[in-house]
Image 1 (cartoon, helix red, strand yellow):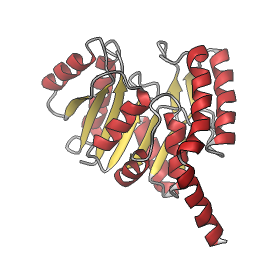
Image 2 (cartoon, rainbow, N blue to C red; image 1 turned 60 degrees about the horizontal axis):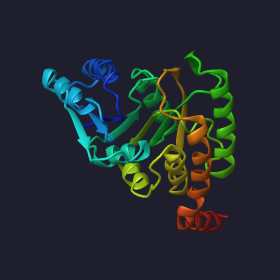
Image 3 (cartoon, rainbow, N blue to C red; image 1 turned 180 degrees about the vertical axis):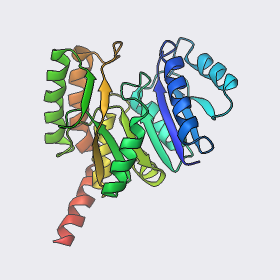
Image 4 (cartoon, rainbow, N blue to C red; image 1 turned 45 degrees about the vertical axis):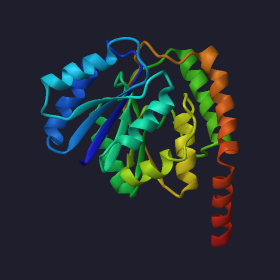
Length: 252
């Protein structure tokens, strides 16, 4: 298997038919015999799993599976579970709303090749990114503020850690997500923090992106938790941070 597309899903019965259709059609055009779609059901109470299985039964030309583990563990847990259970040489996770169109996979691949990176991330604030539909102004402002905190505490130099469109090689996926612990919304920052400490270069790629209504992230409820989790990242990975510092000091 060359490519695994991982879609974390919590109560996504309304969005999944459109997302699965677009993803399947793209893969049929470009990787018809060498790709799979994994929907990671994060304890949904709606028909997320049932809809995915029915879609898979109607379209056997691309392997489509539902992976479940019982209970709602959080998007970070769902992504980690999918990345560690996928079989592809390359593993792309994307949001169930496809705010970043699946066609941006090709853009990400080309940038990763040019920069010789095993990890590539879609990025919205870069000069050549194309935001087709903007978020409400207050969400954009808070997002920029959060990213400044991310750069201070976890991943300096990365302009957008939160875009839900990231690809890892199988090797990078296994090494990075095996060490990750956060189950909720700061999981992206943790994964990139771990990746940099392990020595991986990251290609940050300008992409097309559209805001989609229905976000499950509450600015009031989840904002403070995300900042708290950023502080936890450095504590959780103290040994990794010390090993990274030791390697850097040895190279000097």
